[in-house]
Image 1 (tube, helix red, strand yellow):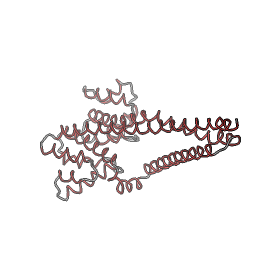
Image 2: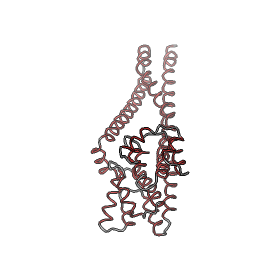
Image 3: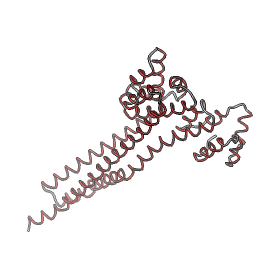
Length: 319
């Protein structure tokens, strides 16, 4: 069964008010025929919600349904999904305009080199024009290589995402060097621990529950590594501090929270700090691309202006 996010939100609220699941679906005017058939076939509520659905929200929901009631599981999954998508959406929205400026300038430069410059060279050609043309071609080559590199990188990324064996190999080989993966894994770990502790599950026992997370992920590799070390007799705090898959902030803050018996507060504080750090990173990335786009536009304007002055300078020489 697949619902819109708003429907899941209202479903969670109604379930917490004490309505049964079928009553909630009737209130939300959702067809319950398929659900009734699935129940008659012996399927559980968990299977009905998860089966045939993909995406981060359903990955979270699959896990939370194992430790919480349906209403609480939906609420927790929505919180995790909203923040993850919120970070990406903010980044995309802030990058659309500077990337458009950069691409438009690049297209304009290509048009200039293909059609305008050859016409100018037919009538005017001197050392100044040849020098400017070399600069234009150099800038064009740099941007072409940059875009080709971005395109190849995107294709490789998509191929890795759809090939589980490649994905696991990449995570195991380079994952510990990718700080964004560490930040994301630490954030997920903190969010899951908070929800599990709300259910009265201890931090150590939570590791066993977290093995239910999607296996083809950097997060699962971290959990599996942590569980192996715990089963080998290592102290939990020591395991966290020596983990190659968690970021430095998590490894410093969480052990202090565990030792001070205020783990929940520390986990919440860590999540807030991680959100703040991601917001700062987003602003830096946006500013860098904006500066690159505007510098390129300024360079293009200067070059075009200089090219337009060449005919005038040559006329002055003949006058």
